Length: 494
Image (cartoon, rainbow, N blue to C red; front, side, top):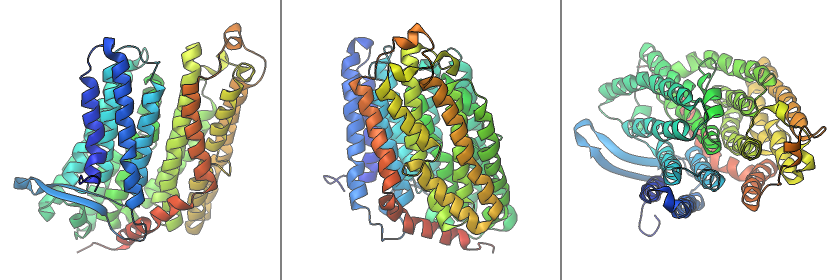
């Protein structure tokens, strides 16, 4: 509780209410007020996660900070919230990212400022709802509601092909979720409840379990995204404004991984084990093949987008190894990827605002005019390549160790990402930052502003802090991962 108010409800509804207030400022004549109100709302949304983190008990098992009240009694649907260590880390990451995207769009967005800022605040609150929901109907409502603000962000403030990208994003993710709704209704008919903890105890035959698992997998695989349902992501990233790309990569992709952890493994564990080989195969294809695809990209945003798909393959691989190290690595990889991919998209945004080009060939010699920016970009590029001492190393290393415990060849193929990541990141960095100055436009580039330096410095501190001292995050995860593996290890066949 905070000032007598339930913390989880505050985490969800404070950003949403702040977004509504920002939207009420109206026209662009009040753009300054909209920006400041959005920043205050984002900061308050982040601050309320701090007592959540401080009061969380890592030694406890099960869900904490639970809130429950009847919502739709006719269908036994409750407003039921609760979090474990996995949810906690993603909520803090989400709130932190929302502050950064508000700052990132401070002077960049000049039209419909209030709507732009409001969309990110509402999106942040809704995604927190996904991470907190312990009622399947509530989870589904929040899960689908995330589509609306991001659809608007891409479709209104995106690039020249924004409508196509927004529609592709919306249709892929919506259609993937429809079978999930069917699966949720089936589980309700079997149990008479939408309570996720009750579903964890439900006995179901193997055939229904497999059908439910496949229904869940379609939705979550699109969201991750896994190969071969990944094609919407590069288009969405290229057309989205910088803030949209940051939130999409840092948080929205994590909804798929979180869905596997919260629904698939504990509700249908037998099917999860039976089909783990399929998911691992798709994950390894993403790690290796998509890494090779990233090598041939000429657009910086597309290269980082494909890099995200490859790195998220580590997440699904770690989850379906059913190994403690692998699963801890998967969650830490989600957090690290939020920091690193968000930082890389912000770096590309800095260059795009000055040059209005994302093509690698248009750059060269940027270090001569922007040395501070070049240093930040180097750190994030190395973190994306998994350099020890950065956050990018921690999750990948644990997943590789977990894979080694299960199968040597899983670990061997997964480890190829360290080579491929270094190849495409260094290739891009060398051509953009070093070499002769490509043009007068590059020579005239101005160093990053204090606002841009603050954003990148915060992310640099997060990347280095997690890389050098990951123990606090690991401690938060220990019991939550153990509980999840315990649920996933039980047979639920009647």
